[in-house]
Amino acid sequence: MISLLSYRFLAAIALFSVLSGFRFGADQVYLDYSYAIESGSKLSIEGTSNINSFECFWKDNIPPKTTKIQVVNPTTIRFQNASLSLRTKALDCDNNKMNSDLCDALKADDYPNIIIQVHDAQIIRGTLDDEVAGADLRMQASMIITDISKKVTLDVQAKKVGPGRYRFVCAKKLKMTDFNIDPPTALFGLIRVRDEITVNIDITARMSD
Image (cartoon, rainbow, N blue to C red; front, side, top):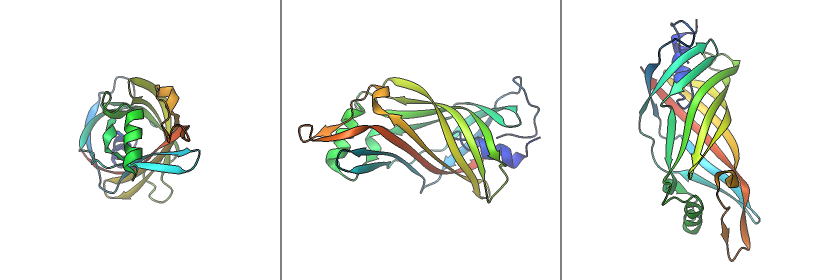
């Protein structure tokens, strides 16, 4: 059996995941676990143009949430209601014109949130109780930008950083055109943002049951 500490660790990732003390299998009920994203956590979009690079950080705090989790086997968890909803207009590129151009490209007036939904997580390496090396997790998720939903795989590094507290780090490369987004331009097309961007997640989650 997986330890209760491991259970809380995996559940924390509703974002990111694990349970213990229950039998495994598809008939296992979903149980509720709550988590809060601590201040100091960082979520950003990073990209480049033909002249420079940029990184835009979300400035909103994420309210506490509850997720449902189900153990499938000793290394795999399924989720319900495990999502992050990120307000597009809360992106701050430290440049008002770029903020406006990015929000226009992301169609923020019509689609005000970018949503990451986690479906399941698998432990690839390590053990969840290891406070030094941590664990590598592979998560199947959906990312919703504008009105387009894409299935994505997230490779997450996870580590316990205190009692009931876990840090999760992930960088996911995406193409804006896959979400029907035209990369922003400026100065009559002289400045062109490249299609590929990276969504960076570096969060610390605090668990409670």
